[in-house]
Amino acid sequence: TENQPKKNEALARGFLAGKYKESDVLNIADLDRSTARKFLPFVIPVTTTSIGRVSGYLAMSHVASSALGTLDMAAHQIAISIFCCLAPVVDALNQVAQSFVPGIFARKKSKERALALRRTSINFAKVGASFGAVIVGLVTFGVPFLSRFFTTDPMVLERVKNAIPGIAVFLGFDGLMCIGEGTLLGQKDLAFLRNMYASFFFIVPAFMFRLKRRALSGIPVGIGTMWGTFSVYEVVRTILWLLRVVQLQWKTEKEAELADDGASS
Image: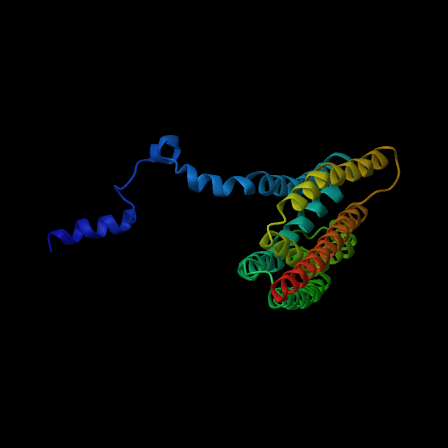
């Protein structure tokens, strides 16, 4: 019974209590270099991907706050808040694809492997399209309802409605995009994703700043136009991802044929 309080105290502090110090986390001397080398190929692609994703959102918020006026800025905050709540519903498909594809991709090159990759990609595409259709329904009917919990200003609410088509298109394609990206990551096509997101890092903000210049010159530009432009980026990205998956599948099947021919001869 005397040891019981100490035991409870240790449990409350966690199972790693007393096993390391905060300084150990940053101690490079204890770094396992062989393990670190395994992660090096992912550092630049993953970092570039993350930065490429964020740049578009930052550019949109900048344009809304600096050029579109207070009503559109308020509407954009509501729109992007609801968007960020709905996006994780389909973003999980990215992790699902990354979990299933590597096990198949690591098999010996054969027609069975190529067929398994094809079936997996087709099934994932069906799931991604289904998720997208559900999200479009949620956006179409959910955004007008949920936006009332953010404001009662009718002018702001009207501007939020203008963003619905762009948000619906973006999230409608997001399922297919996530499946495509997860499949490419599962097949370790890191260079392609790195180069694409490095390009998007500059291209997407460039189009957003173009909208800013139009707005500042007196041409009517609202968040509907801005979200519509952002949805075009999503459509282009989805098409590029899926075309790349098709290209890799064609390459996989050719390699399988060559491997089978070599084995039979």
